[in-house]
Image 1 (cartoon, rainbow, N blue to C red):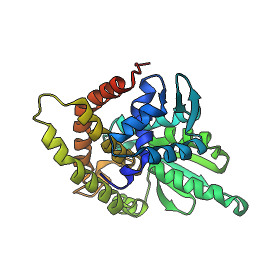
Image 2 (image 1 turned 135 degrees about the vertical axis):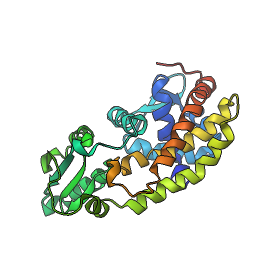
Image 3 (image 1 turned 120 degrees about the vertical axis):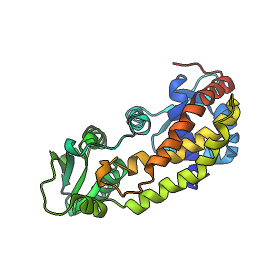
Image 4 (image 1 turned 90 degrees about the vertical axis):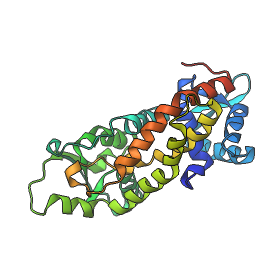
Length: 275
């Protein structure tokens, strides 16, 4: 399991995003600790991660038959956006659809917002063309708009849609705006970790729900970052040996094999029902 995928808070986010939202939106701390134990995370680590998620507003404590947690009210749109990016179309953008350009200027007295803008635009998959100028395929405009409005950063930013009109070779320009080697390294790590799992599971007639859960949660946790860091650039602008295609194939196969039995396991283990 990749280092980022072993963080208890990341695994908890995956459990909420993929399962708890579909099963009423609330889970008891006892059931969450039991599920995390199946992922080799002990109780104290779960409680510590829950504490951090409460402080950030990700989770809210709510008592029913016992103590449990649901997602904070601001998290619904965040997870909905994640669904669109993670499970939506993985096809490259079309060059003829153009670009969305974000131009921002932040006063020095508010430079913390400048850092936040840079980090969030990077997280959405924008490339940095020049100081204060970021761009991405035009299909990311709705995600960018929602993010800027949600974080109350829209007053600093102008959004444009455009076509490239010159003068450098566009394929060379984008290689300086995005860090292709860093993105490819993460795709390579994902494929190396999970392709053997897909090959092992592929011939099996049925998959045990508990084992499916143990594979699916860390796999999805590791994958979640990649559809953000990779904006899905048009194929003609990518390196000839772009390794995202293989990684996406592995993800899609494992998702198809493991998602439903994993949900069945969570439902059986917790007694929660589909909402």
